[in-house]
Length: 435
Image 1 (cartoon, one colour):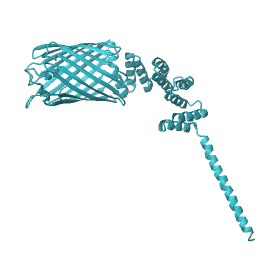
Image 2 (cartoon, one colour; image 1 turned 45 degrees about the vertical axis):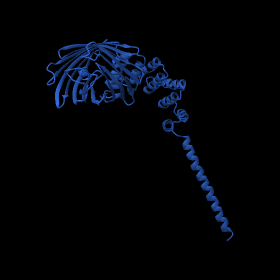
Image 3 (cartoon, one colour; image 1 turned 120 degrees about the horizontal axis):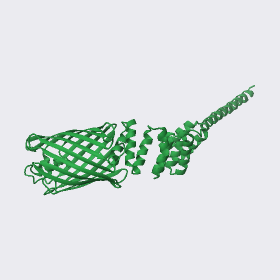
Image 4 (cartoon, one colour; image 1 turned 135 degrees about the horizontal axis):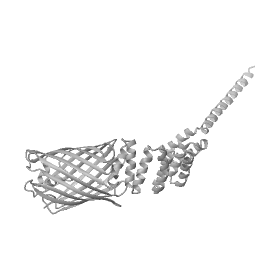
């Protein structure tokens, strides 16, 4: 009996060990089997994690193929596989996946969008346009497809059609800042020709007894390099007339950068500078931001260099722009800053505007006289350091797209001598005809 107990105990221990091993095997096998039987949805999630979090596209492609073996008609997974091929420069494989989805689901928005971007990024905008059109027919309010169409048309130089596409999109999505920024960018390129007329009436309560009259007549044309505008400016100041001719150009450098180049000449060096020039480089930045930096040059009997920079942002129906001008001289450094806000009512030519600033802007005709140090009535260049503040309101309205009217009201409080200030009131109106 005594010898029997140890054997019994040893047998039970052996049986328990075997049971534990069996239990462990069952659990382990069940775990393996569960992993092998992941759903296509879970595999799709794992593939996105591999692509976006781990930046491992080959792994993501492998997992996505496993998901398609389970659910071969899962369109979103197949589109994702096509995108993965696009990102790894396997364009032909990507086309096969996108076409498979479109054949089974004609007009499927994401498939046309992904396929369109594939061709657009591979420098085939004509095919990209063909690819996305059926998607737009089925999804006429698609934000992604309409934005892509506008980009393609802009790339093809079809600015009018691109602008019309953006206007359609803004009807559906009026708060879409990306579309608003893009529309603003190409609005001046949307017609081959445009003529413009502007007139400003300037009244002074203290400083000068006679009002000023400023007017301009312009003609602009779109060229393969960008828009070019010739302008004839007229001014009547102190009962004296002056005329200036200038040319502005906006050459396109890339989809991100474009430039402003300007030059002017006048025979009457007292009303207008004898020569003027301007240059700025503009950048269209992500998140609907834009920025520019450059200079302005004015030459009376002496030359003045003014440096400028600004940062802008489109947000919903608003556009904000903060700009500064810096003018160095022998004894000081004068500077000005202004904030401009636009509230868009519809397209790029329909908005209310508000501007608040201090200091002077050399881009405004009524301020040219400040930079003329030979002007006996006005005084010397040191007046640039006198304090000033200004505010203006504007309204711009397009009618039938090709006719644009504008009106502006402004008030400036200008220090014209030590401890002497006066108000300057400006009312301006303008008209642009595009054709």
